Amino acid sequence: MLLRRSAARRKGRVSVLRAEQNEETTMADPGTLHDAFIDELRDAYDAEKQLTKALSKMARAASSPDLRAAFEHHLEETRGQIERLEQVFESLDEKVRGKHCDGIAGIIEEGNNVMQENFDEATMDACLIAGGQRAEHYEMAAYGTLIAWAEVMGHADAVDLLQQTLDEEKAADEKLSALAEGGINQNAADAAHAGEDEESEEEPAAVGAGVKNRLASKAKAGSRR
Ligand SMILES: [Fe+2]
Image (cartoon, rainbow, N blue to C red; front, side, top):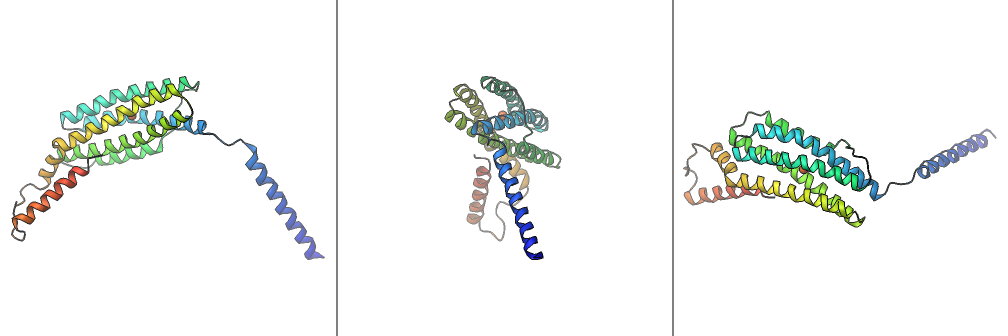
């Protein structure tokens, strides 16, 4: 009798639990792609704002005048991208609002850590390019998705505006690759291997040249996106 009563009590608890779970799943309507789109726009808006601070810091840390100019130019572009995102929100009748972007915060934090290292000038420039390209690729991925979603939902104005920004991000990335491959990486590599014998005793000349070529093409691949 006692056993049967506690089994009934257990059964009762289970059905109460099931009822609560059902209520939870039916309480709010599920979010749509449009909600996810707005969320990602807010993320991008915050990311651009974080990047304006980071880019001016990177420009100050750069030794190469061309690299400094590239960061300053992209800083100006980024300010325009913020305004463009505001236009996107307006075109959708949405309030202009940012939402903390953890992804870009992490990339910026890594960049800040590198800037605190005691590297020679060319190496620091190579590292600044590496950090800058990480940020550009993160943004390119975000804008690529935003454009694809805006297209399928028929937000034509948003597509136009976001595409202009994506084109700027791609150009900024290519500019950084050109600077890296146009001398900064090589200058850093020369400083890294300064005073090394071209032909070491253990290594015949032909093998030495092959290793050097492989190292040079590896360094190139590192900045080619
Ligand atoms: Fe940007």
